[in-house]
Image (tube, rainbow, N blue to C red):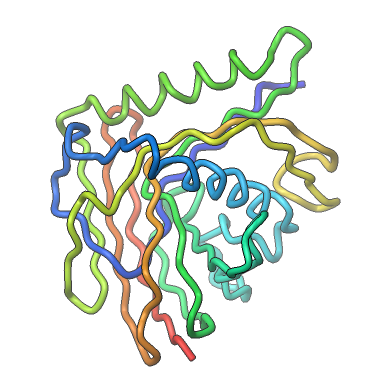
Length: 225
């Protein structure tokens, strides 16, 4: 099977990172990253579980009708976390969706997943590949990102770099990949936000990673109710 790697830049919500932000500014607290790592695995299991017509990673199609805003109970916790997603192809998009009050929001600013598909591959190979890729992206002095919610910024220490534990994702018929189960590992910069106030919020996200020739420009019109 052809090597499968999915690079995901973008997912946004209530926060802002001043642009540019260097790798040195990213929080890498070991205790803080534990739950983030688990949520990263949950996020990819969620994203890969959707058929293409409902997949949050698809953008740029004017006929695409899915809200691209979804939530689910988090593994081994009593709360619900709402996941948001950007696009795989970097399409500029505007999205309108609704999230329930009282839920937390979780998303990657930039992340990369390596799915194991060959006999010679294992967790160590997958993790090293994901880590190396994000290391290279963040080492590029041209890497920039900016996220705003209602025109306000949040501090960069809201962002945690974490790589997920080994996880298994189930892809349905008509999904992003051939149907089946895939083991994988993801690394990236992740944000878990406090709950947003009820009402209307406008979230805008831009990022640029010249080292890999990728950028994002996304706007979310989010109603919390």
